[in-house]
Image (cartoon, rainbow, N blue to C red; front, side, top):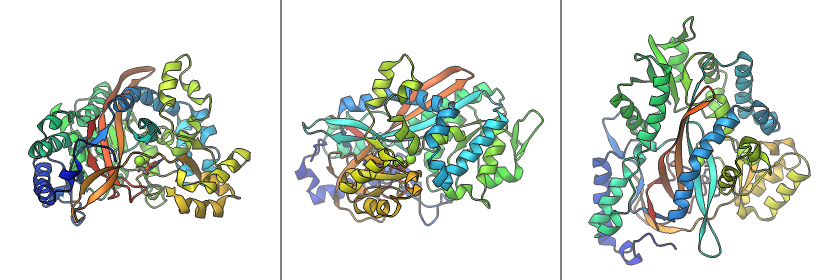
Amino acid sequence: MAANGIPEDVLMDNDLIKDLVDVAKDSALLNGVLMRTKETPNSSEVVTYAPFTLFPSPVPKDTFHQALAVQTHYNRLVDRISQDSSFLEEALATTIKVDDFTGRLFNIYRHVLQEGKTQSIVLGLNRSDYMLDQNGDGSASLKQIEINTIAASFGGLASHTPNVHRHILKVAGRLEDSKRILDNNPSAGLAKGLAKAWELYGSERAVVLYLVEELQRNIFDHRYVENELWKRNIPVIRRQFEDVAKTGFLDQDKRLFVDGREVAIVYFRNGYMPQNYTEQFCCGCVILKLMQSLIIMTMYISTHLAGTKKVQQELARPGVLERFFPGEPDVVDQIRATFAGLYTLDMGPEGDKTVAMALAKPDQFVLKPQREGGGNNLYGAEICQVLEGVKQSTERMAYILMDKVQPRPVHNYLLRLGTPLKLSTCLSELGVFGAYVRHGQDMVLNECAGHLLRTKSDEHSDGGVAAGVAVLDNPFLV
Ligand code: ADP
Ligand code: MG
Ligand code: MG
């Protein structure tokens, strides 16, 4: 068990923990670490604290800084992949044959390519996620789990959790430790990217449109970034796909108007689920309309595709990163150092080898389909079940295989509404936010926008905060 500065006797002192938990929940409410309830997801009449850990979790200082330092390279990588249609075509050729969802995304992408793009300003907001793999000598290596190029959440709430953990540590008598909790402000970092793109668009009246889901439990996370925009006098409206489909129209200059308001930027907080792309709920049609307009988006189908697990696996092949960073071996090394083992399941000897390897040691791997939002991956016995079923067929190409990263567990309490308090053995995942803006060929903004630590009980292999598994946390640098 790794130390997070909290001795085991403190963790086991039930009376102290009960007091601290009360203090912690109030502190979360006072600091605006909030969420709507499951019962009333579209009303703020009754709200609760967003789930979080009682104590911060240890993260080695050098790996933390390594993750921050590589982020601007990842921003450039996503941007370059999204402009390389022949790479996307090759990388996803087998996947789109068997995975209907990626196939649909790819069809929209082909339409967009045919039409040609109107807007030369490109905005990217992403979050690269990592776990720290334990090495035999007690050290840890930073390993990327995935990169989220659409609707990455919790930048807003993560800007407010540091004060909660500082307060808890002070009340627990650990003043010196409380001073070690880092400031973090992804709200400002993400808003900076949005604001830069909005300025380049060049119309004071034009709004930033948040494209949101029907259920809006996590609205406070959005509001923090929204408020950063309002502070800069940038107007924000929130709409769903249907609203844009119903009232959106393009004028003769291809400017988009929704409910009569000119839209400069569409910020996608939705649109990553297969059900978004069915015939009756065709946000694909809306996206196509948006792609033909002059607006700037936080998600182009090409960036969505650049964030797929299949592309992640293709990037890990020898020589592929070099294609995107010619003459920059240091950048290639920095990115590659964060890759875990990734293996193809395409038909052929290489894919056969992957199948054999996974079936022999399923506990050492994760089997991943092309999905987002948590809860889709397969582990252990499930890997064998699924692979036995698809190993002879092309269906296996819908997945990739990845080394399972094995972080060092830490004891902590996870505070979540309706969940009884208990000491859990926990694993953490560090996310780093990135923001970039490109105008034609010029990168006019490329920044690391802050971090996010999420922690879950080791009873769960998969699932994020929204999925009800992980909770918000802060790194305690060791
Ligand atoms: P999603 O896009 O659904 O979030 P992820 O690749 O992030 O997909 O996987 C979801 C969760 O599964 C992660 O948050 C992490 O807890 C776990 N996970 C994914 N890949 C690995 C891995 N290689 N090793 C260990 N855990 C993993
Ligand atoms: Mg994801
Ligand atoms: Mg994830």
